[in-house]
Each structure stands twice: as C-alpha cells, then as structure tokens.
Length: 172
Image (cartoon, rainbow, N blue to C red; front, side, top):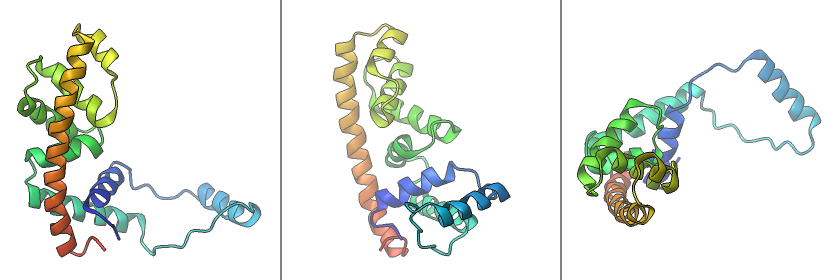
C-alpha cells in the first residue's frame, strides 16, 4: 500500500485530519455527469476501500508508529510537527515538547514559532521577528540549528518505523 514509512505516516496523519463525511447525492450526480461528458476526466481504478476503511487503516498505521516510537518521544513529536494538523491539541503538545528540547536560548514561544516555520513554512521569519522583536539574523541562525536537529530526529524515527511498518505489512 505504501512505499516508505514517511509516505505511510504522512498520508495517515493527513487522512485523519479529514472528516469521514458521506458523499452527498449531488456529488454523486456531478461525478457521474463528469465521467460521462468530460473527455479529459480520468477514471481512477477503485481500490475497493470505503472512506471508513481508509480511516481505519490510517489509525492502524499511526497507532503502530506511536507504539514503536512512543507517543511522547521526540522522534514522534518531530514527525507530528511536520505532517500533523496544526489545529489539533496533539500537534501543539508535540511542538511544545520539541521547543523545550531544542533550547535555542530564545523565549519558549519564539522557539515554538521557529519550529512551526521550519516544519511547515509558516509563519515567516519576518513575521516572527515583528511579533517578538528578535533580530532576523538571530532567527535565521537559530532556525538552521533547529532544522538540523529536527531532521536528525525525523531520520531516526523513520528508520525505526520503516522496519516496524514493513514487518506489520503496511509497506510494500
């Protein structure tokens, strides 16, 4: 199903952020009309999975990853901070724990925003600079060191997960 542990975890975290909503009758009709009248419409081969099957598979992958790495390990937190949904409490807890670990010498809130910048590209360093009155050069230097540490944690985590998920049959 998945080629790598990174692909499995990223897809699963993104899928879990989506609601399992039934397809409306209007959407079914529009899809049928598009399939019939649109020459550029490409018919995708059905996997045979329902939305609930995809969701259950995503939960299974995430639970295997949490068990393998530990739900509160720094490796798992680095992965969640990159691929998780930043509107959830779990994402904020992961970033908070990482900010405590990374220790940039800056205020904890600034470090949390730096992690968000490194992992998700937002907010920009200029926005952080304006919000917290920290020199841009300082933020840039610290973001490089934060980035190196987070990449190291992710690599360690994905190395472990590659073996675990392959043994569990989640990777092809």
